[in-house]
Image 1: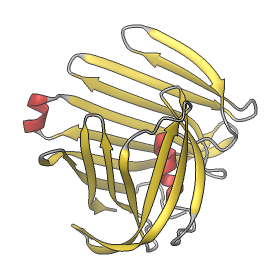
Image 2: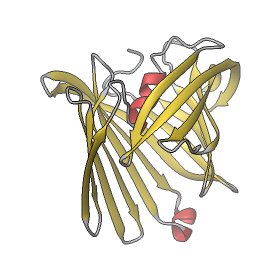
Image 3: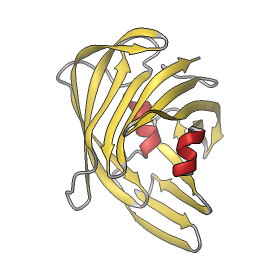
Image 4: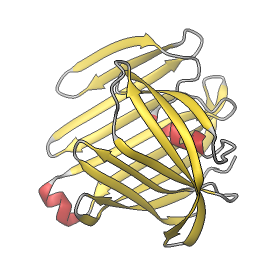
Length: 224
């Protein structure tokens, strides 16, 4: 695996007209026994810089338990704080039954369950799976993903390598172009791209997306 317990990656986050709107950190916290197997416990957290927080206060945290053998998530959570509103979303995967069990906790609690494909990822685990794929120009992969109780189909096309400037120096990286559609066939996001380092680290060195609330770019600042 290109990642290991203790790995921490730090990103500067730009949003729309803000050159640095916040910081995002992804960490492989540990590798532990889980559900008769072994899993990586991975956490991603994002917070705005103080200037942006005055305009739009939000904290964002995702975590995922990723089976060390199959690289499929056992459970994933998303926690957000927007001002005084707190929202926790939990997805548990039953691989034997090919179902996901979703729970949304805010002012009220809503539960649902739905069928999934056997290889379904969550949003965070999908990023780590990208790092182990045998990337090369022209590679085309389809990956089912579920998020917030909705199934998506993500197709991945790999373009040529590009030289990406980072705080760690220039890094030759594969440009990965995801296309995401929901269960109604509607596209999600525009100009999605992830650059994966073409070296032993396989760091995601840059991530970009045009979303409804603006354009986001994450640029790698540090890794260990």
